[in-house]
Length: 165
Image (cartoon, one colour):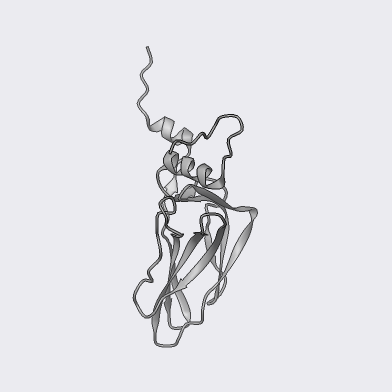
């Protein structure tokens, strides 16, 4: 079925807009702006993720400049190791859309599974890993980013070979 997107009286939905951006960028990640979702350990149960812009299946999200998201982790257990995954969670029923940053708590030393379905072809959930948190006992041992950094247009232009006549 042919759809008009940029003609007068066309109805450009969030889904169509996301599809265009997904085609243009080609992958999920964090853009080089703001603090690029820098993560800070506050204590053994809380992290802060600072401002930045990111894209998950063509849908843009941001943590506003100068602000942050506070992430709460479940308590660790003395003598046990655990991995938690912090994800950008997008969910749709085809009409309504919802986005949040979620923690997927692991069990033992296995990295938790996340859902990455194609929301343009019937999938309802897309989760983009942001951080992997290693918990040893009751302490956070490490927090490692899991996302790609998307270069800005100027960086791409600078990397291209340009011939001048």
